[in-house]
Image 1: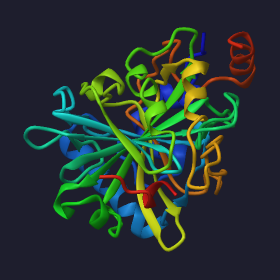
Image 2: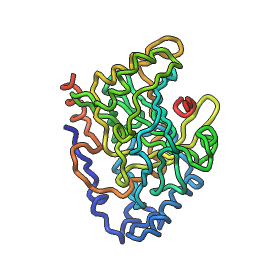
Image 3: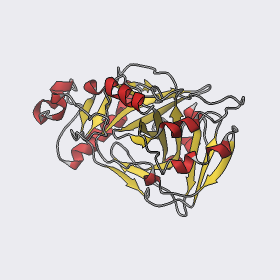
Image 4: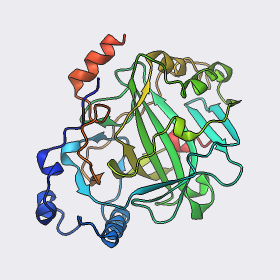
Amino acid sequence: MFSCLNLPRNCISIAKDNAIESFGFNNFIQIGNEPDRYKENAKLIRDLFNTEGALESPIDLDISHMKIIELNSLEWIGIDIAPRKLKITNTGFTVILCAKWQQGGPYLSGGPFEGNYIFAQVHFHWGENEMKGSEHTVDGASMPMELHVVHFKEEYETLESALRRPNGVTVLVYFCKLQDKPNEFIDGIVNNLALIRTAHSSVRITPSKLTNILRPFSQDYFLYWGSITTAQNIHNIFWIICREPIGISAKQIAEFRGLNDEKGMFILSNIRPLKGKQEKSVFHVSPSGSTYASLLPIPRDLLSSEIEEDGNTNNDIIA
């Protein structure tokens, strides 16, 4: 069983009067119950990109050095509505899951956002083995797999257009944890991977609600301004990391390594190396202090022992 999130004592029981001093914020973070104050905090986070810039992603998430901040709840609109069509594509680098709804599509609002962020796609990152399969790490520990759920700001109309804007794209990160039993909902994807072994091939799969794979969360998540560099561009990304991993079996992950890239070679790993240290602001939003066994972080010794026992497609954003 994975261990719970053991937040530093001053993070859990921090007093409102000394919160700013404890983290050296100089009146930057405001903790309180008023919705207007939460909106002010959200604006301060959005404006932080102009003052601090962005961390090159991915990074190690050092929980003990995160800054606590209170925001209004994230709002998930339409995510529980099944799409009309669902398609998976082997891009030669990863697997992308795209969907089309009868009317519109799911979107995010609230939290740190100004405006709505429209769902674009889900894609997957994995490594050569389950010991190192995530791009981000938590307190130095890697996870077996990492899912990226890409959203773009509604006013920019398309993901391609949003990628050219500093506030155009947010990516939700879900880590995966190993379990003996296959994830029946991810099986809907895994069972069709044999049909897209070749790079740039696609197949429609049975439509299913995104909530069958992704757990909506409204508070208690990690957040930072980051960037990814491709061959031609630098894209700024608003990263939001879920604390609760998704269960998946080692056999299911292994199926992704059987896909071929453009040269016909197996995609054994598609994770990028860690980039910068946590030298800019990384936030823990409205932490709950929950101690459920499924929550991050996972101490290295527990992670190692469990693994040993268990035995629209846009490529630019994920290059």
